[in-house]
Image 1 (cartoon, rainbow, N blue to C red):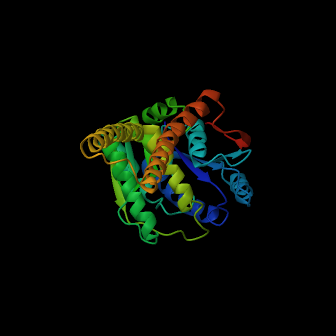
Image 2 (tube, rainbow, N blue to C red):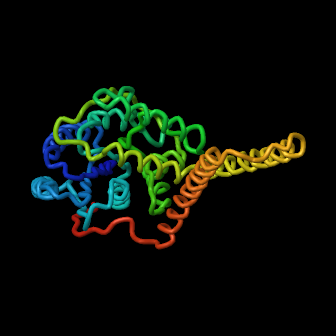
Image 3 (tube, rainbow, N blue to C red):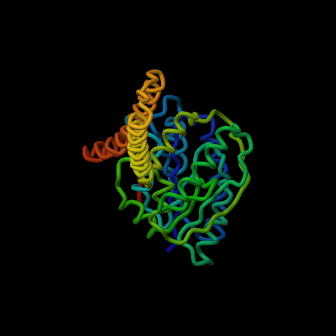
Length: 316
């Protein structure tokens, strides 16, 4: 019996890329079927697109029965789209790729060969360059990966992409983590398993524009840090401890100056500045605590990760 690969493709307003992506995938998987006797299913997950993405996918599904699709009732985000695709995958292997063609789909053949011939559970891609990306965004991205590696229990290489091929065993382990606030790169790393990283040079989008602004990427990074790291809470504790010690030392200084020199406490302007500074630090630490509490609140409501408005899933 032939092995089967389920390819999950999250889509949000990608009408300009859908046909180009499908044309390349068709060539790749037709070739893999003849060479490795591998069957495939393509699961397009429409994340509430406002353009013709879903219509184009439906047109492709009419002429290719390997194509399945899930359409959300609204935009739930890429993490929800990834989860929906993985949850509905029926293959012996599951692959994940973006629809914008920044990840070369031709690497899927090499990924499959590695899983068949070497002792790995997952083969993932990481880009070695950030060609075409704004310098400031690249700088912050590198700092983020270093922070995650140093202060969390997950190791995510710099330039890691969602693009990967994994075994059914690893896929099942990922699905066991059904948390609502998802950071998939961290989840892939947290479940463990042996992962081989394939490097490639970054390529710019051929069509359309990225949906990830600097602000959205910043929020995404904060979600990732909160999901797998408690170090920000430790920072707030350290800041509080430092200022308690400084306050105690200043109290001693004021008492000594008064008793020894009769020097009255003066300088209201400096006192106001210090008070405002400490108040700002208090709000900063309270904000850190609030972020963690908000995630607990979100998880406690146990709302579904996504809601499908319509779907076509044919499991052979």
